Image (cartoon, rainbow over all chains, first blue to last red; front, top):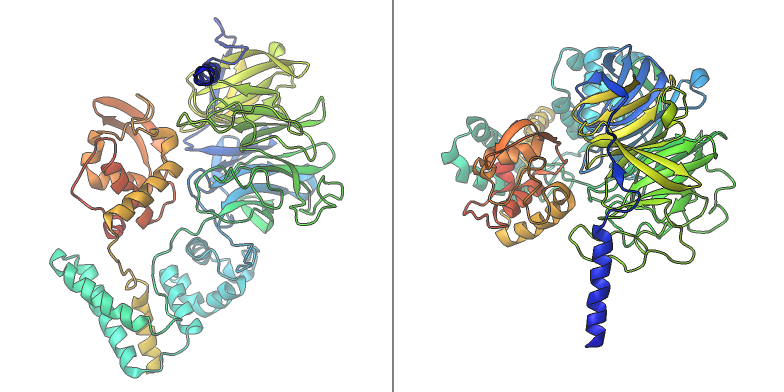
Length: 500
Length: 132
């Protein structure tokens, strides 16, 4: 009996702790000495942004669009590889290379369904620089085909363009032509003449019914389809289903050269394995330190019990690479067998904010935790940040994940948010434009729709304040090359904070 | 001749393989629940009640009366002002990238949970037929 009371008391205490706001409590300033300006409007989910200079900005839209915004004018950049938009995934972060002025190289992360593990696809090399496809209609056609057939080989595409150049230039449906091309060139003959006749006859009838859209013929259509299917089954080389089903994916890191409004030499330099249909926790952020190392994040991909603590698998990690995509010799796990050598730290849930602290030369991240478990971490090589073995949070359903908040060999967060603010984006203010905010940390809150300002002393958060309350879901925050703070707000656009 | 016949035949291939097999409702509900917990629960919450003024409810929601609109908003996303159970919402829900079968499953789950009920079974075919 005593035991039960004790347990109840423990649980109540645990829940009580979780319900209480972690200190320091967030404050709302009585008076503000700043205003804001929307410098880019009409964006749905502006995930990543990277300044080429103060009047030239790259912004990713999660749905799979890359914008270049020069002097306030927003234009699409061509040449992205196929984006796998699923759940929280899509086109994610973007960052220009530290050597951008010389190389024009950029990096971006995105969800990809390319099956790198089974290696059934060539990694997308841009073929858009070939003379053959200067024509706009052909370019458009290739984009459409890449979307529909992300696994297609470049050789196949080139073959196709050569064969169907005239048709494409004259505006024929590229998908239809490509299907035709695949079928004629890549399927062997059907030897049985009567099967052939039957298939074409049935296909014709079904098409007529589909076009007529007559509901009375619905049963008839079904019968025809079943008959057709039974014949098709004899020929395994025929597609047995015309619908593209979700295949699953993982976060990929790409490198490309930016030429005005086009990406060239697009190269995948890292891809998480193994693909999964889960919609959650793709990360992702990209930053560089002052030694030309690239860091990027991938979330646990909805498999918390396996991925974050297993360094032979991807997901729930911070990674470190050289600028060319190779793995630095002194990465923490390079000497070990059967590990992902690009891993720099592990035990993360879903880091969507990352920044290089120029003062301390350390990488800082924030991550979405479970309910009451969002964290700020300082990333150290080879360290385990504990998810899901230790956490301050509980499941959103209210159930307990673990009763441990700390353990030997696992890192403690610099700060954890209770309640969770759903943090995304991270920046320090290092300029002198906002004197009272100098060296403060800024984090976007998706959930409470403000920008959070955190004062930090000796690696402790001493003050938290709401900036631009009710502005909308703050997806990202960056300090521009001009020293101003820029926010990416969902459904709004890019916002510049202007001191009075 | 044979070559042309093949061309003729393959022109129709891609539209003639949508061969649906009816999925039992119990299976669809289970699959739908999994999809819901993966893709929807963060905003609309476990009890389907959402958050007043921010994320509209699905539990006993009058928005669901228009099934086509429900399917379309999951398939293509939804943006702009709507009124649900008398409460105004003006936000954005982006397409989650679910395939048609997954959408049919999750709609079946939503239409039969938290006090919602319907006799109508949403099939993959119905979802396929819904245009933007």
